Length: 629
Image (tube, rainbow, N blue to C red; front, top):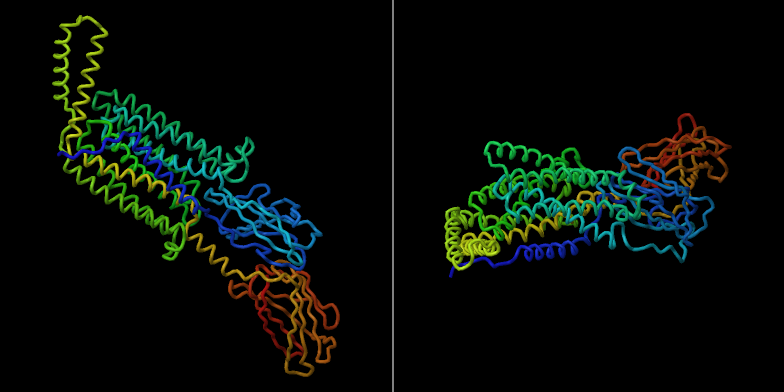
């Protein structure tokens, strides 16, 4: 018995594929996080400070955007403890922001809640606590939902997936017509596929623009929309809508004037113009993703953005062309082997581009073997690589079917003519019974002849085992491709492995939170000369990074003040190659020195050195490692 493909309708196939992709996207969306990460804070999470700090600062792994109320400090009662004014403390590669606190804050546990938008457009948020004096029994309860979560997060994720799918169908379907099967511009199912891709991308982009405000925590309304339009992501979405206007004109010409052009020379010129214009518009649309997401932040953005555009265009040419071929094989009885072979070459070139750009992107976003297996991004990337390998394997099967495909159309012009003549003869015979000038009867006979010709064409198509095998393998390719697209969508919202590891190392290298209390040290010394023995007592208040007040007392063996000719202090942070930072305190009275402006730039394990000179030749230096929070 001659093997034939199962007769699924196009709508059933598309619904099945989309349902599978939506299910996978829902499952994987729980692993999504953002690009930037909080790497430090002052006070630290869980710290107990002796006195109320003047402010709270947060340090991030890369540039972020913070709006009004981005950092909130709440008392145990829930009352705002900060002044509400955001301070930009960024310097060089250090990304730091802070808020000032009110004076006279009571003891207890304080909650710091923050939210921001990373440079690649994804929202991040979090909260931590610190205590003044001693922890209190109650703390402020904050919502557990993170930025970009909830119903808005789900809708935003769906809109992102639909936008990628629409881009693939629009660009890949149009490329299939121009590069592989120009006659397909007049095929209705193929026209509907490309137009639906345009509609899906346009609607999803508009939805993303409207959802952007609540997605980032800015609320919903005209005010938040205006704020979104001032951001890089908002500008990218508006630019995409404008480019889709140009794409609509391209589609109208492709399925209008292009199909009606009969002169070969004119059609060739129009094909060239459409190819150039379509490539420019498609690259521009792809650029709206590259300019606002992962490629625009992190390592080598000037190289990563054009590479990302090439990656998106290659993906669209391959997967969108695959969708177009699937629709044609199921809904159009006539497609030549030469068109399928041309698409096979286009797909091969797209795979080469995807491999080259994908290797670079993987190195840029992962950076190490440990991140490839130990982070959510790395594991998703491995899943994507596996799906691509499966897709290439199924494509190889499709290529074998293409080689075996008979170079015949299901309905050749001669066969169509014969069917028409047979229909006319049959109609003429029936016309001898009915009135030959009856318009209603003539229309009925025309519909019968058309239905007969279509039925014969479908029987001829389904009787070709090579064509049936090709349909089945292309359907399998499409199923894998849509799942691959879902994984790719999740990857774009997942924190890259390189960033996750760097943030982890930064947090691991930061010193543990220590109680914020004045540093009080007693350091015995002996310079070796007459009256060269004694003790230096040093206090540093509040004993943490930032400004400190220092007092130094020199005492003799009998406990009385010892007035020495010279006393110097320095601080060195060897782990960060900072210092020594010299401090020359002022003499207040005999045996007492002070300095009101000792600046400790960052917390860590510092080496304190105190140099004491008791005569012109008798001098000693005392070293002491101290942890400053």
